[in-house]
Length: 212
Image 1 (cartoon, rainbow, N blue to C red):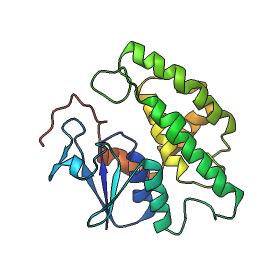
Image 2 (cartoon, one colour):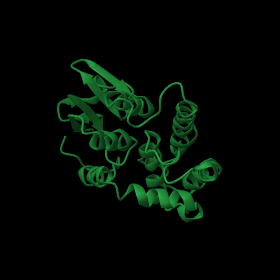
Image 3 (spheres, rainbow, N blue to C red):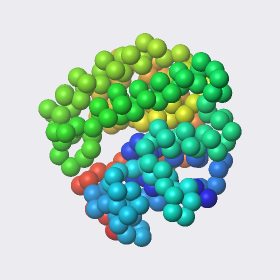
Image 4 (cartoon, helix red, strand yellow):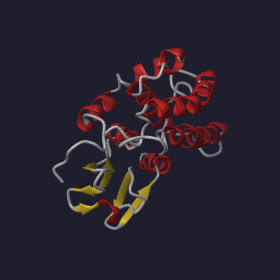
């Protein structure tokens, strides 16, 4: 059985949604990113990078990096969320996955913040907005609809939803991006997304108290 290590509201939400949607047998373990702990102790013993997600695939085998984990999940369900490798869509999907990981995901993380990995000071929020606004506009301009690559729901969609969800949390003007706001609304109507949002609860904050 697969075991996903996550913290609420992080990029781990993307593989969590896919696992919930896929019907695969899996469990989840919540991580305290402040203390770097989980219910059985030191999280750094699971992932020395000290962040989530981590997917345990066997007793002592762990995968890290969100883009890799969602692709692994897709492999477990006969590429239900992707395309055949001999198609142009396969390579376009890989382009999108790398774009989300490097141009969006990493640019959301501010070096000038207090207590959280997302920007939470006026200066850091403005800095991040300057970085991600043109990159989000690129996605907006090339959004096929109803999903990122057209009619097929792919591994890119839960990952992109993490980004639009962060936009909502940061009160960035998502309404300027009509395709993305319709996408975000559509994602929230999917049963697996509703389930994950309920399971994960309030987004992680490094200032929260924890029982472990």
